[in-house]
Image 1 (tube, helix red, strand yellow):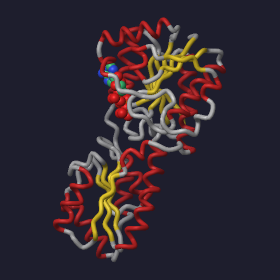
Image 2 (spheres, rainbow, N blue to C red):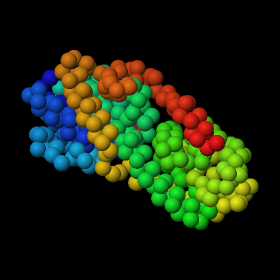
Image 3 (spheres, rainbow, N blue to C red):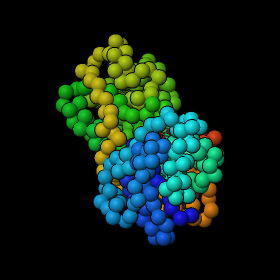
Length: 324
Ligand code: ATP
């Protein structure tokens, strides 16, 4: 391997910059060259490349988003699109890739790597924490911290006015943020896409909390909850349980931004370092992950096949016990 191409693709997440920095500096340490591919697969198809040196990644460690930009690129799903991408890669002398993104990004990388026999290592970057092959994805910890900060603030106002707040957090298919932030923020109830809690069941939980003379209550609703999001849940609860002043807060895209937490910076740095070393030791197709406290790799095939990411059942139970 002489030159590594690095790109970010799909939804952005805090910690992606820290991972780019680690990939670049580890590669330079091994006397490799690095090309930054801008806007993911779109930039690969258009040849939007830039040579990266150590200084190119100065002062990005602490920044959210991604300096390489990200995009969704339907053209890369086509054989012709990928052919254009390969011609650009070849012309630039890139002979290995590091992809940072979610499972769509990984799928594209796997297909491309198989078609053109180019080694690729993937780094899981998404706030949703829903990828197989790792306990944590980049950005998840930071997003949780952002959500908790918001919950704490909402609690202040809720407690002053006897309010029942429905706070919607990101996670179309995954309740990871809802569960973690719900536990860390001391929510009275958590609505997860994986659990499918009925409105009547939720009302029962709120009745119990009311019996304990709670002056305020917070319900965390994951975006992908089957009842149709926080507004719908709030409306249906209010029809039968109208004791509190009911409010809805949708946190939205602010969950994607912000300076990465210490955990995400360290995880990103370890993963970027590991990805380059794996390529150098001959791994031709894998994802990097953290298992327990160890950084490991999983073949892309296994990581994509074993997609069904499961929420921690014990943590769900704990969240219920905490509301006794
Ligand atoms: P997130 O889920 O966090 O938004 P992601 O990486 O899953 O991130 P996607 O939009 O699903 O985001 O995928 C990113 C890009 O990867 C797509 O826009 C497309 O260019 C490429 N891609 C996804 N699936 C395929 C596929 N089956 N074949 C080729 N390319 C693909």
